Image 1: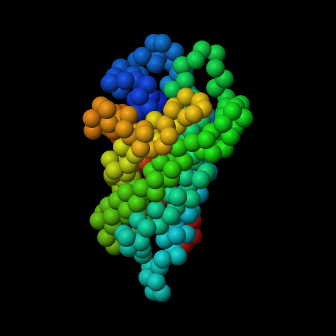
Image 2 (image 1 turned 60 degrees about the horizontal axis):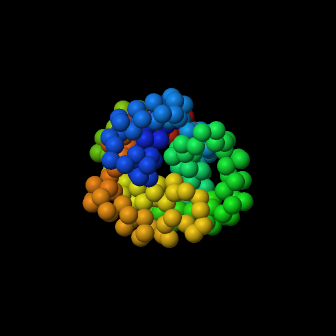
Image 3 (image 1 turned 90 degrees about the vertical axis):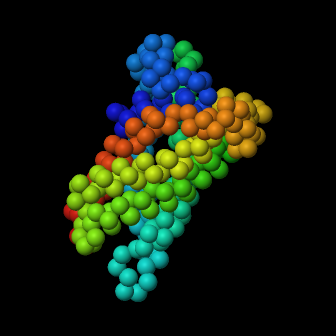
Length: 261
């Protein structure tokens, strides 16, 4: 989490429009030069505290929804069943992660000197000024759509795992690394334009009326820079996705191998 957060900060700043047309390296250099090294770790506390719980709920819900689709005598889920379960688990997750991602995005793009970077005070500030719907849950719809695109995450992982491990035995660390890396690349390649819209909405200034009336308004502004506007920050995102998702699935498979069948 700590090692990958600077990449996440760069992605959010670039996709929210704050960094303009700067390259990822230029965005990183500007942040460090103007705000100091710790600026690339803004917003690290919410995911640092909650990512473990979020992933536990995500993988647990995914497994439950997969099992619910299994027919009598069916030991292994099909790829379509895995992907359908991912849509459902992603929707469930969006309810819990939308406020966290909103707070994180606000902190990552903030350049105000002396601003309070603590999580709880910022949650309270957003709630008191804008409430739940337009404050803490601003950007929930694109967040839900992004999470429901987990079909492009769990589906490729299951597919690559089956190809690398056709005998159906428990996955090895090598299988988990390759399948997890593939899953991360596939997911972000599919969802990134939608994630740019989400970041643009969540990182917008807290004001009334809101800067964006909805996803369409944010998409129109992004489209002013052509289709490339929907892929601003894609490279650092992929650079982060490969090791992060490889590590995530290695941890998952390690735990599954330890637990009794």
